[in-house]
Image (cartoon, rainbow, N blue to C red):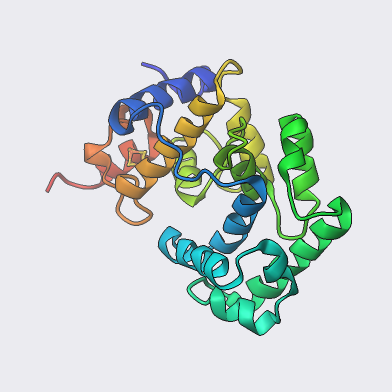
Length: 237
Ligand code: SF4
């Protein structure tokens, strides 16, 4: 039987195949936004449900119409528009600060030029912006209409990967992104990398819960040291 200690890349590929059988392949992208709009969406989404950050994003579009208008509005108005998010009082000034910085650096409010860079360069450029780490840069590259090859790692993905022993739970966010992306086959297309993000996230949402993971009904149980230990320690109901 395949074990994590033998060949991590083969192990991750087996996990990918099993989860793809459950959650699907060629998963539809949930956004078709330009890169700047995707960046705004990602900045709003930190520690906020998709539903609430989506509402905040729609509010910004409806109230202000353009990102230039968001940049130049009184901060209290931006804060009110994004109130469905967590910490709108912090996110509103930070968002305006990023929009002003982009205007200074690019001369215009657009990130469409990122499509002319390779993914590594584009991610580095994005990560120089305040509040932008590897998860956000990967989201902009992958989820926007750039449809680039980058792996965002959210908290569900991270939890599943650590329980399977793919990465250590103490690894930081930046190292986790690099380690998990490096383990994917280099020939994976952008769609397959997106699928990997999606199936790991969905598994964390639907089976490998933060509290009481449903290990007995998990297709990864025979691969998972955490799951085996939990099942052995808990009598069958
Ligand atoms: S066996 Fe349990 S801990 Fe392991 S991935 Fe599945 S649900 Fe998560």
